[in-house]
Structure formats: C-alpha cells, structure tokens
Length: 446
Image 1: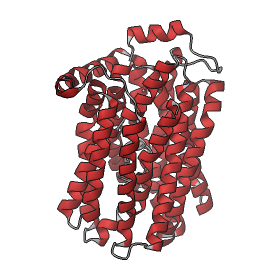
Image 2: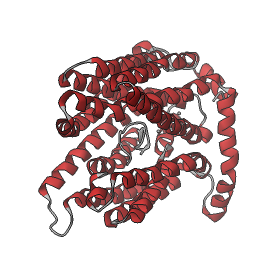
Image 3: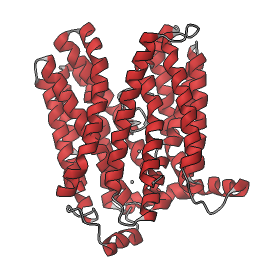
Image 4: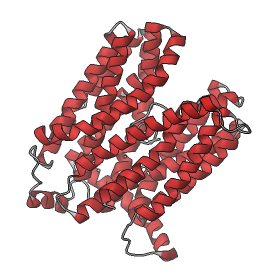
C-alpha cells in the first residue's frame, strides 16, 4: 500500500468516531442529569487540557517519533470513550473529557507530519498539497458518514440493554479500537533508537525541541505570518460555528432552526470535503499562497451573506458556501506551513499553529457574543467577516518559497536553500477548531 493510501485510510478511521459522537455530545449528558451549565464546564475541561498540552505533546512527537505518540493517543482515546459510555455524573463526564483532551493534544499533528515526511523522503518533489487536500476530503466524508450513522443508530435503537444515545459511543469505541490496530500495522516509521533509554532521552529533548520550534517562528517572517493567520481564523470562525444557529433562529424560529441545523451540519461536512477535493486545481493554476488569500476573502464574503440575506434558503446557502471554502482553505494553510518547516520540528510548529486558535476562538466568542448582545447578531457577524478577510495578506509572504503556480516541481536549489536557512506544516477543527483541528463546530477535537 502506498504512503498516500496509508495516510488516507488512517485519516478516515481517525475521524469516523468523531462523526459518530457529534450528534450526542450535549444530548447524552443532558439525558444523564447534567445541566447546560455543567456541560459547558465539562467541555471546557477538554479545551484547557489541549491548551496546556498542545506544545509538549507536539515536541514529544518530534523527539520520540510519530508512531508511538499516535498509538498512545489512540489508547487514551479508547479510555476516554469507555469512561464516556459509563459516565452518569459531572465528575465522570469531566474525567472523560480530561482524557479526551489528552487524546486531542497527543493526536494533533503527528499523523499529518508522518505523511509529509514519508512522502518527501520517497520523493523530494512530492505534491504534498494534493495529498493534504485528499486528506481533508476524507476527513469531511468520514465525519459526515459518522454523523449520519449515529442518527441511524439512535433511530433504530438496536441494543435493548443500552440507551439509544449511548449506542453511537459504543460504536465509536469499537471503531477507535480498529484505528489503533490500523496504526500498529500501517504506520511504518524509521526511528534511530528504541527502548527505555530512547524514551528517556526523547522526553528530556522535548523542551529543546519546543525551543527550536519557537526559534524558527521568531526567525521566519513567513512562518510567523502563517501562524498569525490562526488569530484571525480562530476569531472569525465564531461567526459560522456559534452565531449561525442564532442567526437562523431569527429567520425561521428557534424550534425550526434546531431541526434544520442537524441535516445542514451533515451537508456542511460534505461540501467541506468537496472544497478540499476541488482546491488542488486552483492552487496549481494560481499558486498556493494566492489561492489561500483569495479563499480568506471569499469566506468573509460568505459570512456577509449569512448576516444580510433575509430568508432561510439564502442563509443556508451562504453557510454551505462558507464550509466549502473552509474545507478548501485548511489543506492549503497546512501545506504552506509544511513547506516552511524541517521534519524534526514539524509537529511542534503545527502544535503552535493549532494552539494559537484556542485563545483566538475564546476571544472571538466573548467579543462577538457581547457585540451581538449590544447590537444585533448580523452586526457581530459582519465584524467577524471583516476579521476573516483581513487574514488574506498574511499569505502573500509565502510566495517567495511556495511551489510555482504551474504543476512543475519546486526547483531543488530554492527548496534546499529554504531548508538550510531553517526559516521556519493539523484541526480539523479537530479543526480544527474544537475537534482538534479547525474543522468542527462542537467539542468532541482538533
């Protein structure tokens, strides 16, 4: 099996359980006695754990190896799902999401970093942009399929001794075990040393790896600009992840909006996958940085549509267009990061990029929420749209080292020079966003 196929199989298996959990994340704890306020605190547990562990775990993956860290992440995810399946109190749910946070932090970046390093080792001119786009396509399809399967399982209620809302958790647990086995078989990584001594040396090396990654960020204006995009992106995502349901309820009413958002969310993941599948053509014609910049402006425009269009059809059409662009933009952003970073620091820099989105999203939630309360939801969405579009110029410095707009490879000398000077490539998200990459509107994850 080729490296590309291994990556796509593993990527799909990794996100399929996430899709199963999305429809029941709030409903299951509500059914088991938690209030909405308690659920918010439980979800915050995961976010805080990810925030504090994102960089150390990224450094660990670069120092120890991607395969052992991914296996540890998958095992932690299994433990989190087992606890979630049995949880019936706030303490147990908090424990499940604490483990889920560790899983998200460990899982953030290593699989993608392994793919890029393996692809470039096999072919220095490998088209990693196309591979990452296919990965985003598989991610969207996997989450959409998981969400639809989850709804079907809840409707069928096939296990008499298990609550209907817990059946998707049990199914996700089984699929997580399959993912663990697939990682063990399909992810092949060359590591110079193994055993307890190698583990000890790797753990000791984590601070220096993090420091080296931070040094890359300080020394490269290109890398710094790319990571700064996350500040605008994380802030602006609040418009279509948090404010859109409120905006839709203004148009059609609260009850109808809740009924519409379920299928609309599944459709959003499908069009996100479509965007990821189509974007390589545009990037080969216009170049990755210019395409990424244009997509930032277009996404801001779609948010303007969500804010100003009057009927539900218009609001939903703008929402789906926004997610199409979202799915297209993510692999381009990740590819530009990868082109600026050497393998030994790849996951660390990806973790820094992902970590920036956490406080930016929190700030956006507070600021745009307060603005919506003080004025109107459309006004807050328009401000968020401007912030999203304002990130576009930050992609332009990357034109100096990006692949040419034509389909031809980057000249070996230019790419080697970039690496020798070390100027400085997930979430999806979980997001990802709250799924672990900037790719989801619920806490699952990155």
